[in-house]
Image 1 (cartoon, rainbow over the protein chains, first blue to last red):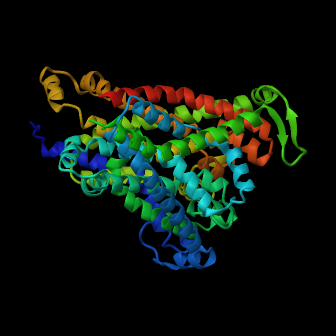
Image 2 (cartoon, each protein chain N blue to C red):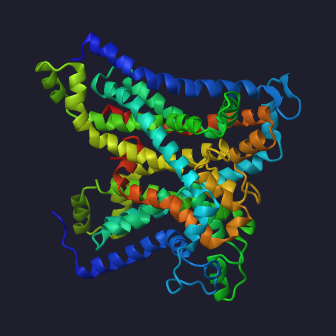
Length: 276
Length: 288
């Protein structure tokens, strides 16, 4: 039975929560606001909150001056490509672990997870060297493969937890009715698995989009995604606050929106099913 | 019942993922181990042969090793303390009845989705810049001298930035855990006259202990590896060189591969110690 709550207490809760929420969100809000100011207004003392001449010129400048479209495209290709490739490899693996478990399934899952714990810096040089030898330093395909590999454990793991929630009886019933393995996967399993696959896709796209170790260390002018593009603003050019803010806003806006849809998957995906 | 045929099919379906991850783990790891026993300076004479455990000894006896260890410890424990303490409080707050709960949740979670280079750069310039940063404006407004955050208080500044990024993660997981707490238990305790503080320490906190452990372990693994935040803000200067950053500098900046690889092996061992505890919890959960 839910407790009845006095309006007064609810008002206090609401006030405190909103103040804290806005405080935490403030850096993002401020960045978005600054992106619409002129450079002079951006560093005005006292700071201007809402009453300034709103302008979109920073966005235009960033777009034309810095080849923004190419960095954006690289981000989309790298994050999207690695996620899709990962799903293609992980679906069969997760399917077999969920529906035909063996004694070793648990060990394999835990081992996969342990590869995720490998500190990237520990294998930085070997990967760097392999990329040079294979001539794929600063190459999008190389990054697609590397990011796929670092996220593969999470993808397998998430899909496994989703697949395990599909009742096995349904599969047995399909088999009794004479469905072949192919039909079973195509007509019975896939429709039930699609929500789980979509959630996995979403979370891993976000993780790959924001990945900032390999993308910073293995790219230069050609394959650099938005993470590296933004890092290039830490040079003196970064002193142009309004342009920096416009570039930042463009880099984070799509992911903020996607991220808000993926709150639940975040818990499942990053705690490996240990917190539900 | 799984048939023999479906078992071998299952094995076949698992193969690509297993083989790829095995390669991804073994090949670079073997190379790191190999390099760690050699004097390897690509820009100054290349591979100069076997040196035994020299690199391992030199890595821990170099003057930058212990400062890096203490910086790492300070940043990791600082961020853990802040995110878990505030995370518990925020989770309890967000669990209370209120208006606009969904929107507040979204506001609180947002920083987690900001890419690390953006948050580092925004904090560095727009907030912490000693001339034009928002903090400088605020300090001047109160008649104080603006602080050069990232040079005079570099480590606390980085702790602040990283905590801001990870607080949403802790909050979200603790909130999920708190929502599974049986509210009747709290009501019963309240009727028996337990004070809010007693209810927190004897019911809520014990209920959260498992989730807190998980947050602690997962965050530790990620925090040991923070890179972009330091790369963008201080580049490892002003006492912010962590162990992973030190290894990065040895490998890519001074191109001393042998020494860097030995450091890398230490980092791998350290991460594995944390990972073992995490695996135990996750593994137990798999059985249920």
